[in-house]
Image (tube, rainbow, N blue to C red; front, side, top):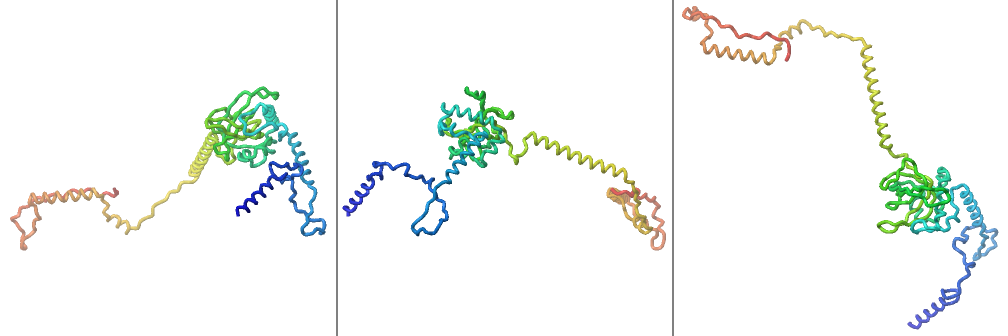
Length: 363
């Protein structure tokens, strides 16, 4: 068993060392090796049916050459239009390098000059839609020299003098912005001018929009170590307000004042119209209905005295009863057994308690 294993191992080693099959053999001819992207996978209908089941027919690959010529034509047109940077100019640009290298300085200022010379509207139309921070960071070669548009919150804005250049650029502005998909990783924006509403500051959070050329994935140093960020070279940085965003604070004040004044005018007009209508309408007097005689007599018999009057009358009656008991006054009988009582002297009859006049008002 071990012998069979040894023979198999020797055969495998021999195949690996055979010329042209391993690192030690003769290398294959590069012209004879076809890249997978150069293979033609398009299925075409055969010209005839004379092929056997184990045969196939191949066609000359002329389509990629036509595509290459068309792509080159579009590139040259975009370069002349100012919406694309010549790839030959960016040949020395390398990603993941710290800052702008000396060999990249000429390309750096030439791209800045082209960004400020090309109209912003033209650059925005030429920038591909839907490009995000993640796309630029994962495939920088694809977007290098292309115009891109980024919208985000600017946290820092610096102003610094430009190095000597042949394009007359004297002042540069560096902004660090965070987009919706960048998270805690910013993008570096370098431009030659800014909107007057933007002010350089080390701590702010201003929504901005920028359209410029992607230059490189540049490294920068922080307290937490080295990081990389996409560097966009633009002509102008401007503030941005989303169409769905609420109006700014000063706009809200003006809107609220307008609403309050409008409501006041409406209420004033309504009250004035009511007052004018009341003056124009003639006044009408209404008479109470006449009561019948029977109803009037019934109302006259009602005791309409107030509670205080009734209590005062009860109090006077109680005082009269107490006074009668103290003086021994009782009702004198007119006669006894059919004869007048002559023994009982005549006493003056006390006056009855005064009674307040009947009042017709209700309390």
